[in-house]
Length: 196
Image 1 (cartoon, rainbow, N blue to C red):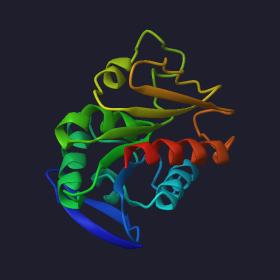
Image 2 (cartoon, helix red, strand yellow):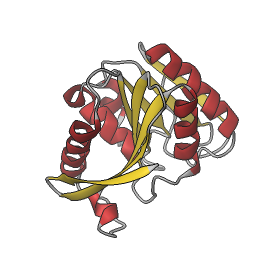
Image 3 (spheres, rainbow, N blue to C red):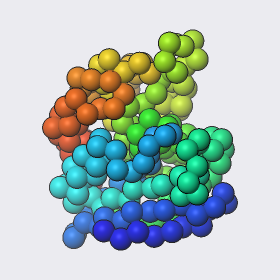
Image 4 (cartoon, rainbow, N blue to C red):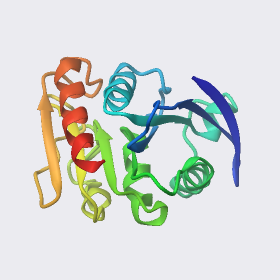
């Protein structure tokens, strides 16, 4: 694995590169609002992707690289993410973007702009806890390519509904998605195999 700093309009991002030997695709994953790329569900998804011969890039947003805990505004996150995708994408490989929680939201909002062939959402935050009226489903509904959502059955951020082109895999547990990492790995591997 190698680490590369990538300049974005909002400061440097950090990309952790894990190339496959003979890649059939590229998976780029972002972290949640308060966490990093070492989250157990991100690591599990990355392992499943490598097992399917997808190269993996784990992206740390500029605010995290700068040592800040609070996320940047959505427009800044999206602009930084798009700049990283431009820098790491391989034109001859299918590009799958995604992330955990807030990172999944970024991938959904930018799917069209980055030319993603699919979006992988780990614990998509449908609404803030206890506030179902503040739905963020429009971000998920705006994705026009196939999407896989792996969601905890007791996630306080809600459960996204099934929809055309959208696969929802429910695993035991909450927003951390650590209740059944084997099911997560299996779901990600099976879904990526169809995207290659």
